[in-house]
Length: 342
Ligand SMILES: [Zn+2]
Image (cartoon, rainbow, N blue to C red; front, side):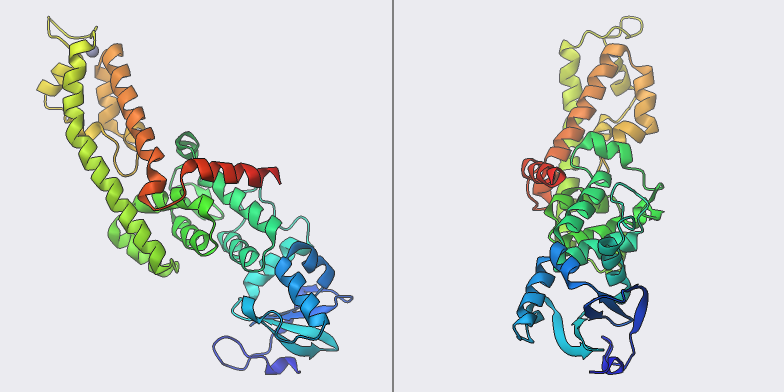
């Protein structure tokens, strides 16, 4: 058939053009998208993708409907070569995928500067077409920025830094939506958590703008609610913990016969409830009030309170996956280790 009869997803007639780079003279199959045609090699695609491999094998024995279940439709031919329309895939996204396959230096998963658009296209399309190595690499790349251990997350968790060519805070919803759609379970708890650190209004606006699926948004909102409930419970119990700690802490800093720094601070109206972790888990690192307290307290009381905060932060983190209905950390870490070995 003729290329100008291909229709784009909006139903308007559009003529996809041969792509500048991905048009190899000795290619033996033409892939068609809304914008571009790609003349590439079946053997290389088959090597990396089980979906393409099956599609080509079936088309060789003459079944024209071979790939339809995966969303592709086999068309007739283009200049004597088999023509396959990749239904539902954007040309620009397919460019990222094919360049990752055909240009060895195009995609470096060790980098944090791959564009967000590219990272998302690679994750979604490598999943759809089962490009195993690319999928593994992109998951590991995202996982470095949304890791499974709190101490690692603390090292990267700064909303105003650049990630994948954007502000980090502008990446999280797009990544969550893509990870959810790509069944990248190992990425979900940390991404859910990163997305829950903002207002409901922002969550809903960003989820809509970034195409986060409805079920994913529900899980996010439910998990965020559980985190908040847990926070309120902890806040309510902290003052009691401090009072009971005073009975066995040997404070070395209390002035003029007062029994302890903690008691002095309780009497001065410091709200110890505020020293539990908040939904951001930020308190221990970022709060001026907490640093103010730590600087006033003696070493013993300071160590005690720091220990409490650290314990609570870890406790919240350990329970993150269950809040969001995800696989637990042990399973996720095992899967990530397997992926890193390949
Ligand atoms: Zn003290």
